[in-house]
Image (cartoon, rainbow, N blue to C red; front, side, top):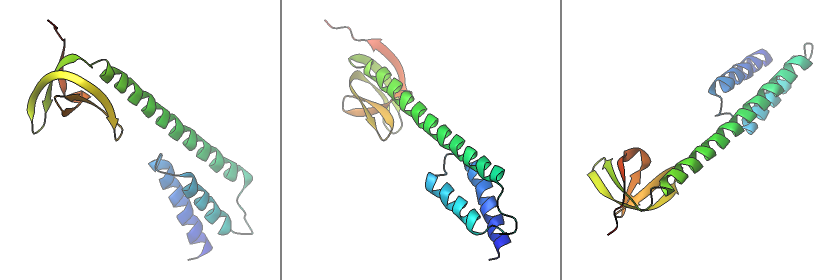
Length: 138
């Protein structure tokens, strides 16, 4: 592969990486940058502005990825807090394959990044709950 083709390929990969967004890792970016530096034309080296622009884009991407991860963690914590508030409440839920399920929420858990509550030994996703009532203890 010629140097021009390698640079074009690296530039195309960089454009694709930017459009893909969060799927680009630090390692992938650094490999792309090293490939660009190795295959640059010695008579026309990469300009400082171009190099700094790529670093700035990478830092922006990393910041966005960290912010996105933090937002996911906050959302999960909020969902767990909501599910915890359902403990000892009577709920009705519609579950695929089971149909309608009603009972008192026993506990709330997080499994594989998803919040679930347990009713009579059945796992119920929060979006499957259709009604919530206070338990009337006698």
